[in-house]
Image (cartoon, rainbow, N blue to C red):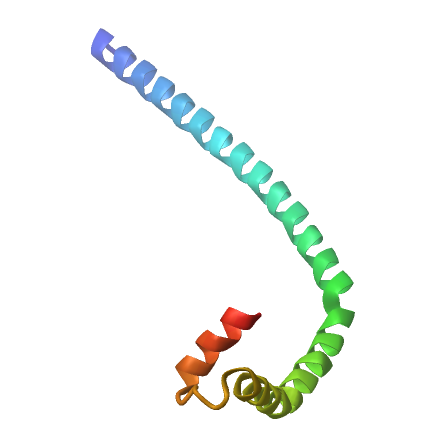
Length: 102
């Protein structure tokens, strides 16, 4: 085997070694990322479990707010009419008047 054959084998060995080092480095970074993602997943699961009881309460609160919306609108209209003497004709004007007196 001549000098060219030895240099080729040496170059191939160095190339394989460099590739192996690069792949091991990538693998280590991927392990670190996986560990971080596991930590994030655990924190998100804790947050989900801690806030799950709020879901039912918020749904009931939302339903109560939606159910009371017509009465609130009527009360707002009455207040505006009482203050302005029925001058507000459109919804936008009523909203503007309400923000003025809020």
